[in-house]
Image (cartoon, rainbow, N blue to C red; front, top):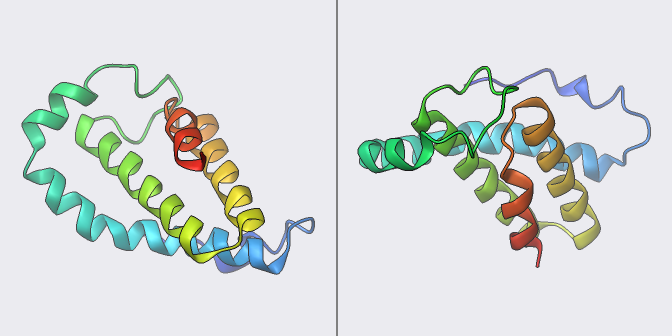
Length: 123
């Protein structure tokens, strides 16, 4: 499980304490959630490999998640976290988090469909 340094968001002065809380919660939540997502996806490796082998899910920025199952697991765990945030936080905070999650996954990880499905979840 990878958990980055907690003061990573302290350097960002233009966000609230609540926003810092939800950003750090996401790191812990998604890492713990792999304990649930990964064993379940192991049961469906063949189906996931068939659906997620296509490059429609990632672009050239995707360097760390090269096999279909790892891509699927990341999409799932971040989606579940966004749903959890919508239930536990006010709309302003959850909208902030979901937009940050979309940016991170699309711009840094190359998960080009994250924004599309997140928009559906916001509706």
